[in-house]
Amino acid sequence: MNLMKKSIKIIKDSQLENGGLLAGPKKSAYPYVYPRDAAMMTKALNRTGNVKNSIKFYYFMNKFAKIKYYGEVFHRYNINGWPCVTSKDQNDNESLVLQGIYDTYLHYKKEAFLEEMWPLVDSIVGLLKNYTKNGLVQTKRSIHEFFRLEHGSDIWVNCSAWKGYKDAAEVAKILGHKEHSKEWNKLSDELLKNIKKKMFNKKQGIYMKNLRNPDIPDISQLAPFYFRMIKDKKILKKTMDHVKKYLWHKEVGGFRRFRKFELVEDWHWYTGGSGSWTVFTAWGARFYKELGNKKLEKECENWIKKVASRTSGLLPEHIATRVEYEEWKNHEIEFNQRLINGTKEAEKIAEKFKGKDKDLIYWATPLGWAHAEYILLKIDKD
Image (cartoon, rainbow, N blue to C red; front, side, top):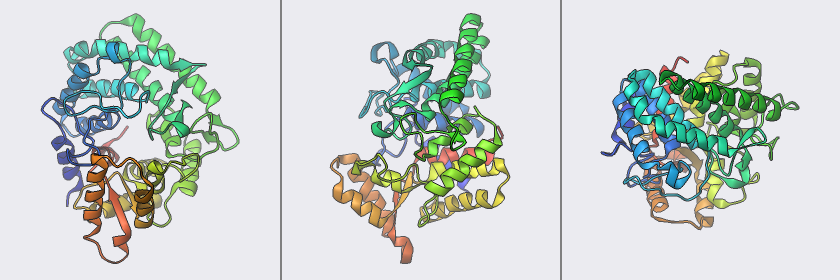
């Protein structure tokens, strides 16, 4: 099995006629266009010679975002481009779209594309400025989409915004909007200064997840490195040691996103915290590679390959033990149709296994973002 080719095909097959990129298949747990996921998917498409697919997606966003009307880039849209929102104010989506537009231009090299995207870019930067308070971007939810853990000043949102400002400034420069470029570069510099000053945990020697929760381990503490904002390998090593100690799933392998039931008392989030995430394990492989730790890099990558071998090359969102999964099912109160579809698919996959592996549940298979991160792991040289 060539997992690279499989990953490219899965992402391309997820694209709708209108350009939207579905996070998962239409009859899966995530049959929606999530800009967060899609932006990562376009970066993978760009690096594999499929920039036209990325262009189609940003035309989708340009048409359906309607920022002047809605006042934000929503966390998900349905197949027709209409907002399909369960929780508003996830303020990383805006900056991720900015990054994706600029990244697509770098592989497309046509200013006409940026000219068409300019009103969207300008509007999104305006949103980021409005979200800023006391020098940091504020949000209600972030990468995990969970208020109790993430509201306020969150590391993923702020590092993403830093990168968004930088990329928007480059777009403005290319199009000759010198004053915009100057202002947005200044905003990125100010944000970087405040992230370093306010979000660095001196006691631990790493960046914190959130000002409200300075000591809680979270995989998004890797955000400063994911967005190439910080390049200090000493801090990266401390961060990797930290997440390995607290978030590596000793029974299943792979990285969790946060510790179960730490501020997160809602059963709806239980398997998400407890399970091992393909996306984040790909991050682990990338950063261990940067640190020159071949042993742990290989441990992460081999885990992903093993998961792929168990699912015919379809990488899931996360894997949980059956005990964790059954506990979640018994307490879950939001069983809508998409969750029912997700449970049917997860249990169908588990039925194929024998021995110890039958006690593992593969959730949301395949997930486009997981395949995108595998592609980026293998070919991204930034």
